[in-house]
Length: 147
Image (cartoon, rainbow, N blue to C red; front, side, top):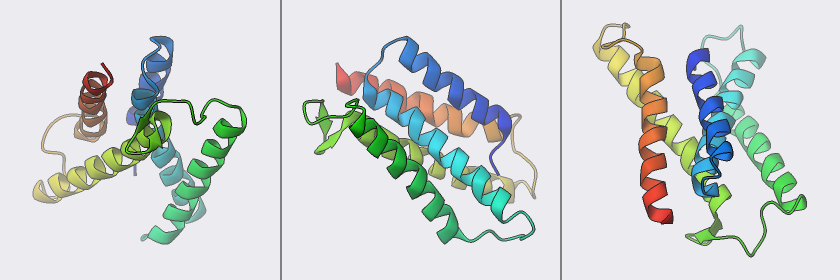
């Protein structure tokens, strides 16, 4: 499960990126992270009585959130063919996919670290620092790519 402090941090990061008018690649990174967290919460809400939640359900929920938002952004002409592209994808789309992958990796790392610590965190605020830290690092990397 994703902690609520981490979720608030991601929402603040997203809001800050839009307020500072950073490139859509970086905003998309934070949007993708938010998609994953909302999907995890939805999956846990639907399957709260099960100890093991089905991964396929999580993937379907994530795809529904992601796809419906991307379609809305295309219809609202926020994403169009004239926008900057990376690997053939719009910056916002590529950034959101990168955010989903980054937070997924950070959650796996957190799980591995907890296993090494016998179910306890190896350092304070581990569950918050890993995803937020990885998103901040990727934001700096993407910022340098966009210059």
